Length: 242
Image (tube, rainbow, N blue to C red; front, top):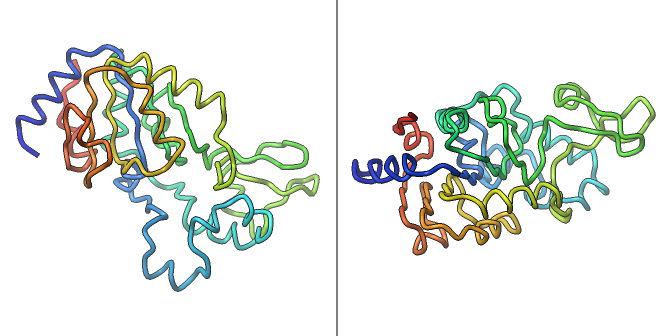
């Protein structure tokens, strides 16, 4: 990452008033939250199914106890703290520069850092409800339970997380689309833009300041006005907010 890249990014931010940030798993990995797509040795030892299978609506219905074993082990990282990227985005929002965060992550770290206008495309581990009566439960309740977590009414408690085979919340999608369409700058960070329909939302941006910050290349690199192949946290922490 060259000084000129940071200078250009700084100039773009300084001249913008309606910045939207679109982020993926790379934002959370810098807080120590593993990307479940990364199949490591521990994963291979403990699970007989690939993560995409376990995190599907069908698997939740047919192998519920195995679903929650994986979910508690790999998806509940409740001790994780916001990193430099989360904090800088919250700072930009507080300064009136950033209008929304659109995230594919489910950990709630943007809100923990202080961001207010966050659209969680894939839901949140912090919200859980009974599939029978709708009673709400905390993430800590799910973490501290064993087997299949049950409500006081006997119903199964399901995390408010969009599983494979489930539709994204339409209201959240509409709000994210509106924010992106009205943005005068779109920063995309920590995502390879491989997960749809979420990745398709960036097509609604029609401005001239499209920024990509990701450690690896993405399908949109050729269309971006600035591409920075670096850690999202290391990049954003260099930005000054006035």
